[in-house]
Image (cartoon, rainbow, N blue to C red):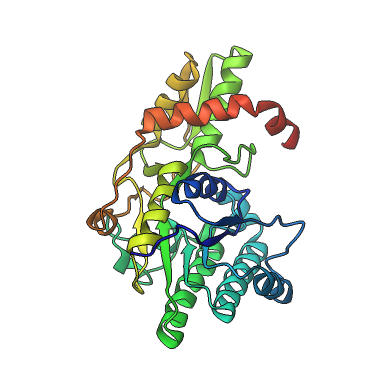
Length: 317
């Protein structure tokens, strides 16, 4: 067991959805201090600045959810930015953590690290066994590099650096941009606007048959804290619900939560993407963790957050 009580803990990327959930969750561990720094104060892609900040602050433990993130369109449109910025963030934080003697570090990856046609459910050993999904391979490659950095520092320097790979996350703090958001916030906003306008229907892309797995961000944060306390090994760990559902069913659940009673239509000219993406949860279950927030309750929580922040969301997009 690694205790977080009484420790100085840095959450890199604390304003993001995962980072803010981690800050909320970590207060229950009674740390001496939760360190945070905004991107205006520290550019994590700048090696010298990151190293200097780490020398000044000397955290005992580090969580690394910080990343440049976005949906398929954003990844496909800005490949250089997604690859460069995520490579630099991972490299700078992991190397500086080694330099200042951080006791433990957890690097956060993404399920997109796995091959596009990996056998389902996807086990951790599927990494690097096949070609990536082309539309987000730039982000995936940077995340794979982060995993390998943790493994290499662990091997060469005996650093207690670990990695976790979350499934599709949603919840408070999500991105609701009309073109750069992920599927759940996109559907919530679409259903909300259809309801507000009195539209007869709302549309989804493709056939609605692809299956996807989702996890509420507060469950993810709880899993990451659990891993930091109980896990110490080179292999990364999947963090997911262990269950998936078709996009059409997800859309209907979203419509129900929002209260939109119109029809659901499908634009069959748009692509479906990968037929299924479900990660194996066997490893993290064996470590004693499982999620506690069901999809229906999680969607309601996410929608309530959207309603509370609707004015700011609309101004930003």
